[in-house]
Length: 92
Image (cartoon, rainbow, N blue to C red):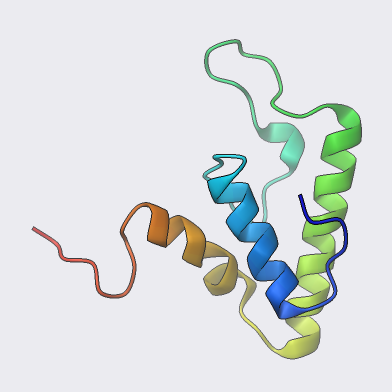
């Protein structure tokens, strides 16, 4: 998992890692303490991990604001791609 977020590319990488490495269907407004393993009903992340991930997400918001990027569009792209909901997805 990326340790520091300083650029738009870092924000994109963080979103990619959440979707493709952590296998999350996440939303930037969600607190990471809200993610529960559906099989065990246990939290997905420890308190330390939650704190780190929430700080990373706050940094993503700061970077997107600084560079005038839409965080929801930017961070939603990896999930859209994974679910094939991208701009050119066919609807049948």
